Image 1 (cartoon, protein in one colour):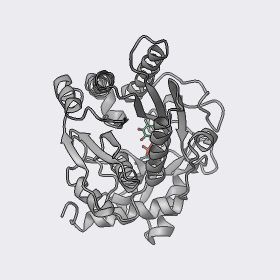
Image 2 (spheres, rainbow, N blue to C red; image 1 turned 90 degrees about the vertical axis):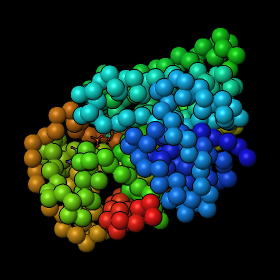
Image 3 (cartoon, helix red, strand yellow; image 1 turned 30 degrees about the vertical axis):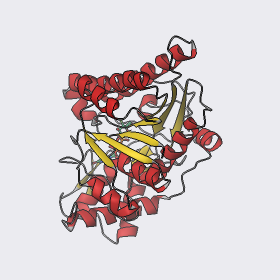
Image 4 (cartoon, rainbow, N blue to C red; image 1 turned 45 degrees about the horizontal axis):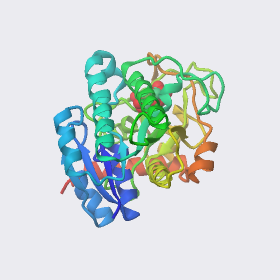
Length: 349
Ligand code: UFG
């Protein structure tokens, strides 16, 4: 069985990716420090796939712990590296934590991949690297703009580290040929169709979809819509929302593409639907699919928000033979079903 390490595999996108990998017969090892996720997720994954993934509770930013993990799994064929902290606002307040946590983990993983001779890595990047693009849809070749927060900067620096390490290996400077696919996600929302796994935000959600579902469930009194004076059809910002299960399937395709040996060095791929929706359009879809009238009000713009972004996703189709299948209504309905499941208190039981 081909053995894959999924770091951050109990997290939101990680857990859906583990499902996709196991359904395709891969042996998955999850490495996660559980700082923003729950160990019970492996039981939910077992319910969905019939296989309980192996969970290694480890902080990858700790070198000795990371070394020890790779020593015990020296037969890995690929790494899918999700493990990172990802809250924009928190990163502004705790930059050192973000740089250490996100970048030391990557360095430790790469050093160990070289040590055990594993040369394939799928990296979890973000459309945040583009900032507010001048031209839409944004392409992989579009310029990266300076990051507006330490979190975004860790994604840019991580892409640069991967580029340099891949280049050194192409120059023959390293015995290991490193092949990298940096996947630039747009806005993942929704949950698995079983409603057994989904996004579990820590405390008050920063992101739109969990805030909507928690408001509808009565856990929050009112959704604040940050600004309706943008240059868009209804004045609210536009994002390219992508169903997390589509995103998970893209990771499987990316990993198989790496394993086929077709990536020389590093490549970057946008993962979105190629379509943008305003905040009010997401709310309308949610209300239609859930039958619930959402309590929301328009407030001032949120600092640092960009006006609009959606991706050109041709490259994913051409290279990975993948494209997003699920539409916005399926995204909002699945997010709502997941919220209802959490509300039953059955999570982890
Ligand atoms: N929004 C609201 N109210 C909320 C939350 C969000 O109106 O309570 C709006 C935002 O203003 C934005 C849209 O909903 O227009 C989406 O906001 P999210 O926070 O869900 O997502 P972002 O696009 O702001 O952030 C995402 C990722 C980040 C990444 C960023 C890059 O979550 O990790 O894209 O732009 F850094």
